[in-house]
Image (cartoon, rainbow, N blue to C red; front, top):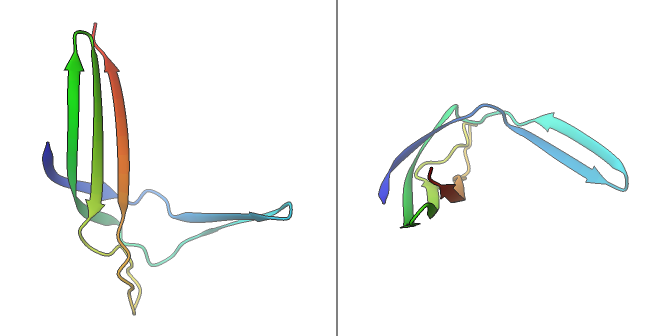
Length: 83
């Protein structure tokens, strides 16, 4: 399978913990939407199915005045059972 993907920013935070001290803060200057491309493979067996997908962002999600070229990417594994 292959096709476009759209992602929406619901929350952007960073959490750090060191020597028992933790801190969390919001990340600013992040775009609210990301467009990417998803590629995947899958197989079905009698009642079971397995699928893997890789999604890569096509544009930077940095929305600051001097943006870096930072893109999202992710891998998804799916296992299913039919009834």
